Image (cartoon, rainbow, N blue to C red; front, side, top):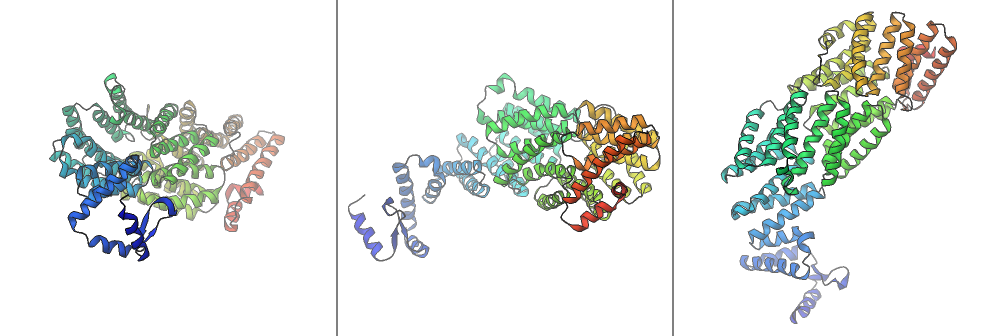
Length: 601
């Protein structure tokens, strides 16, 4: 420190213009008021200001070289104000990366914006990788925080910049990002096929294997809900490219490992929606391990959500709570609405199955409002479906109808091409009609869904929800043989993949169809199997009707003692659910409607 500086600082402190920092011996002084700072700053000539900013930056690095790693934002600011565009760009980019890794989304976007402001002024070819990093980092931060329109604008700006600078790989990456967004949001106004064709041509022109694998991955995304086998072909091509020796030799920053993880997670989703649960779990576990290794918390939460839904199908409820709980905790910590809703869906369904209906309603209603931040109607459809079924179980068909009709409006307004979602909507509306005792209104919605194609079915997951509605419909119309044919086909398919939660529900309905035709041995066999699959799950909302139906079948078959045992068990579960309902109106409607009232009587 210059000999004159302490005296000058003492003079300024005595004039009440500055004060010592806290603690007093840290050598830091601050202006007593921001107005003093602004006045002093404004009194400097522009050139002098720039010179001081550069000196400050250099002094910071001289005193503490590690500031380059831990205080890049401060250095970017001083170099920017000092007119050193090159260093401002590099430190702003580093600050953006640091903020993004810490999930400080708003700060990350601001730093990336500063870097991108500098980039055109630099124009150096050797900065292409850093410019790409800035665009992608900004787009990712915006997507994770739910600012999807701004993310699209960033990727369009990226495309424009790439074309102006003749950067084929960068342009292809921008087109891929835009295509992904259009597919996820079901934006029919975007020609995704043309985008991906151009991206593929650009990737081949640039000889960029990672980008080419991303093109194949996005082609798979297009067919994920419409044609799982075709989607799988594209995903397999992507994996072949990314796992080739040439790709394996590329550095981690090329995106090789991350691209592989993205393909694996979408193979998981494709398996989930098409009913190939065992394959989906294997791919989901690999994707989760990869994203954890990469430190990508947002995508790790996505993998956890997929796995929680797969374990829900398998009636492993403890795993559901564990996976979805971790996924929600991660998503909340990083302010990721997508992950919070995706993991929350499984959590709400679990509450519904366990008869914790008030909790399911509260969580589901909250998530529906939150889902407005995510441009993916699948989540809102799923949540409305769960709530429809909860309200029916509570004996409030009017509330159920509101949710089912909301689901239908969402589908109509979306103009989505995802046919599987349409069938799901039809089944939920039909269930609502059945809750009012109106099978004739349900008929035109359900009949088109009766024929299940052979092989891998697009959105076969929806039959987890369609199946029970169809069986109930056939039971109420007395069409037992037709109902048994449909139920048996689903039971066979479900059991192969270990979907015990949904197998148990279909066995329950098949048991009731057998009871309808007075085939008591077949009925009791199916109902016992249904209970066995749910043993230890605490799925009270599914278990009590099975016990009640088994009691009726056993009594009709002449086994009064066992019938009495199962009736007592059904009553005990009903009472435990009722005791957990805080609202008197919900408790009253539950105990007074349908089979619950008959059981109590």
